[in-house]
Length: 224
Figure 1: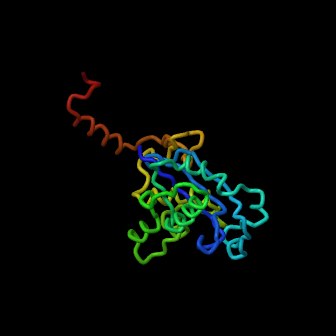
Figure 2: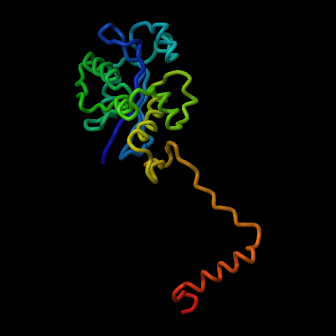
Figure 3: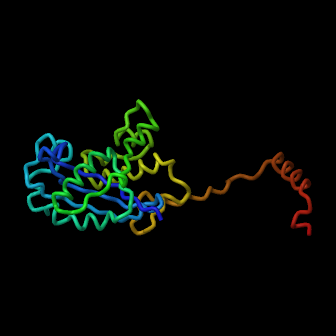
C-alpha cells in the first residue's frame, strides 16, 4: 500500500529564519493514487502580525488567527496524520518543507527527512520545460477546475494539487475517480447514461446487410 499526503501551507512570508511563520496547513490523503477522503486542516496562530503583502495572497488576517492554536499544540496531531512513511507531496516542496521543519524543530519535535518530500513543481518542469508550471497553469493545461481558487488556501490548494499530481503521474486509470471512502469521494463522476434506443426502423439495405452477415456465421447458437 502506497500512502501519499498531498499538502500545502500558508505563511506570513518567505523565510522562517527571518521570523515568518506557518499560519495554515492543509493535507489530503491518497492511497495507491486514490483519494481516500481523509484530510487534515488547521489554522495556526503565528504569534506575530500577518503582513499586508501576505494577506493579499491568502486573505488570512492577524485578527482571524488570534484565537487559533499555536503550532506547538497541533504538532502531534499533524505528525500523527502524516505518519512515519507516507510520501509528502507539495508544489515547490522545498518551501513547505523549510517552514514545516522549522516549526517542528521550534516545537521540540522531530523534523521530517528530505527524502520523504516529493515536488510536483520539479516534476512539471521536467515534463514541460520552459512552460509556465504554477498550480494555476497546470490546472489549465490538464483541464482541472480551479474556479474556486480566488485566493490561496492550504486545504483547497492541496485538493487541487492532488488532481494535478495524478495527471503528472500519468493520469487517472479506470476506477481511479472512485474514492476508497465513497461517502467522502472526491471527483466522483456520475455513471454514464445508456444510449437511447433508435426511434426508427432499419432500412432495406441495412436488413439485407444483416442477413448477409448472419449467413456467414459458422454454426450459430440459434441453429443448434
